[in-house]
Image 1 (spheres, helix red, strand yellow):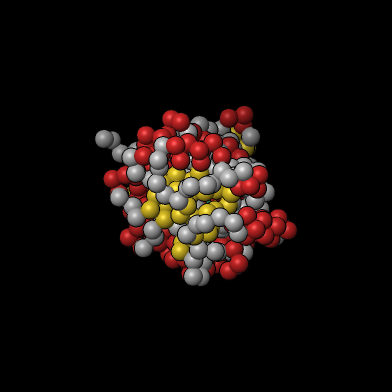
Image 2 (cartoon, helix red, strand yellow; image 1 turned 120 degrees about the vertical axis):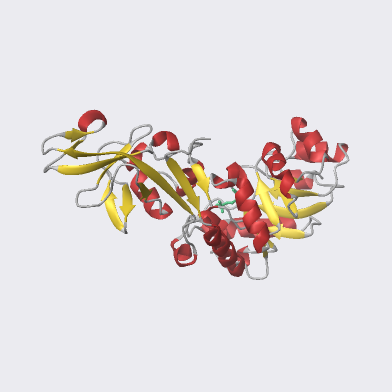
Length: 342
Ligand SMILES: *Cc1c(COP(=O)(O)O)cnc(C)c1O
């Protein structure tokens, strides 16, 4: 197939280093990996292969289709976070992954299907997925062989009283349930300290270079590096404008490179006026609006020619501040037109 004018360089050493750092911070707890949404946009197969080689055992996807895509890897432990709908029973019974049961109806369905070991999600105040205290009191989990009992933190990226509150509720709810392991922390939750690690942590974002809390900044390195090819270099004369709606006007003659990346690739319009490409460590400011498939950057005094490749700055905390998007959206929004390199 013809090579694309757009590349996503993925740094396996950086991914591994991030997992090892999070595993260290998890103390005695095992450290898993959330690889849903195609490994947060980087390729679930590549992520899971890389992390399994590093020693990661517990992998989490959202759906059974995502689990089936990873079946060839024969991962040590793969779990489906969104549980078992009627439509999922056959896939779940095939043993491709273990369901995370999150409603009383799912628990009944799994019991009736004669499914084996499962995980269970408890709701401790996020009010997203999970069984509540009423479900537990009603015997929803009776007869289930529970491997990991888990819950999810709503505000771990903030110093919120909600964190301790959810932790307390988790411990109280887990008290009456027989399970092999307890698990509460996502990436940000790991930074909340040993009290939040329990037996298994479930980082996603930070594996991929995201920094959900400032206290993780020193430990996490960038994993995903978009590169775009220069399709044209032109001189824009003083007084001329660049791009849709002419939002940028040259105050002096300016050398401009047109790069093959745009909002259809997840390089959102919010980067307009804020984003930048990189050349030999120097920042090349974005000029005008992000188009669907193109951006313009200032290359005045830079030796950049048609056909060259430029890094697009995608340091996630900085890119999030520039674009107004979350670090999660920046990763999962990366489109399908990249040639993924690793
Ligand atoms: C996505 C997800 C994670 C990972 O969260 P991050 O904030 O990306 O670290 C962990 N647990 C559950 C239940 C999730 O849905």
